[in-house]
Length: 557
Ligand code: ADP
Ligand code: MG
Image 1: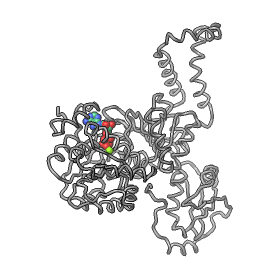
Image 2 (image 1 turned 90 degrees about the vertical axis):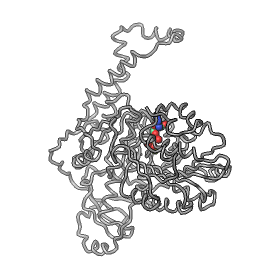
Image 3 (image 1 turned 120 degrees about the vertical axis):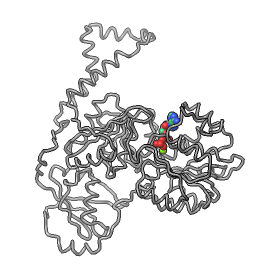
Image 4 (image 1 turned 30 degrees about the vertical axis):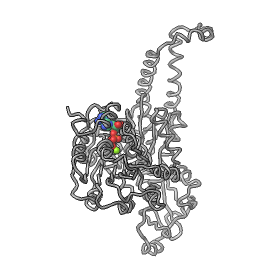
């Protein structure tokens, strides 16, 4: 067995590694650390999430810091605030036995002055998000003109989030002679391009197959009608009494909505997305790590790279657009040799994606049926009874039992068991007896559901705002959490637009747009009876002006 000392790591760092309980280096650590300690070089290292990439760059990085100087010597760039905090915490642990080594996280949403102060005191290592880092550079709060090392962590995700320009800009303030280390879970073309543009003959290290998923993860999909997604999520959660999970949604709006519904329904759930303040996000993450929150509902961006152990399930409330993101999501579970399950809530329209997904992750994705209420109740009752069985009785309680004894003495053992079990049973059965908890059965070869009567809406955005029928439809589907086929007859005029849904979606659509603002402007959606009118003249006119513009910036500030 390889151990850390044989990799060339100094005793001080070894001490810290030992106290962290790391027994032996992971594969990516075994492959990168000796190379990075031996020579000054650029490197591209690819390994799936949860394989210990932070230590793979962190240890050799810390080892080359000169603590006699207070100058900034290394810069780590990571996509999100959470990741930034997580990486610096991890690095601080590794550096715990090295005196005079300062690591400062630099990220948006917190006081820039405070961060500047910390940097000024002398930080040899900065761990930064691209946005805030540029701000710090502009205000001359940092000096990275003589760093000897720059690490791009989660490079694939940074590019996904549109940070390419920001990275280019930041790197332009760094010296040419520095080393650049790029770490990524996947290798899309964009990453290869970055490597080409910014690196000199990088050593390439790949662990496992590119873009592969972990063998510790079981993949399952559950076919449901689009409108049953939420009920399916509830059933999947209820059928796993000890669930500790992340539920991924595609939009901030869905994330918030699903989390709120879960909380209303009595779950310890929380939302994590970019519209929350830094403070709110920190609180949610803290509660999740402490397992006070058992179901974290998150957007891909906000949950990126988050390293929380023991996550039992990753649930895809919707599939992501890009397959690589699926690997990232699933990688939140099945970490550190524990087993995890990745569950996809799928509609029929998405069935063909499963084949592609299987091929790319090179793993089986098993079709499963959403559990029936009776299975769920049986599981929960078993779980609750086991919990009672395993509960330790504390002798100190005797002093407080007199009253309880008086109140309960008339009941037989059977009656007491029933009452005790009812505490859990009543809540669940009340829910599952409700009509609204139902799920329609879907099989792969069902005919599509007939649409009911149409509802037509008018919305006050148009081609003037760079919308055309196509990108407006994408926006609506995404924003409303509907399926592509649920939004149709989208007609865009200059100042406003029309679209249809089936009548049963009416409440959902109107509620979603209630007091909704886009770029500070109130977006209004009203029902209209001008159904299906011919708008071709205007459309043709507006087509000329169609420009490509992302509907919403994918980038987080
Ligand atoms: P990645 O960046 O590849 O997703 P991380 O660096 O976040 O992975 O590491 C995942 C988890 O594994 C962290 O909790 C980290 O402390 C732990 N870890 C890293 N290296 C080792 C090791 N050699 N032995 C045991 N645990 C490790
Ligand atoms: Mg990482």
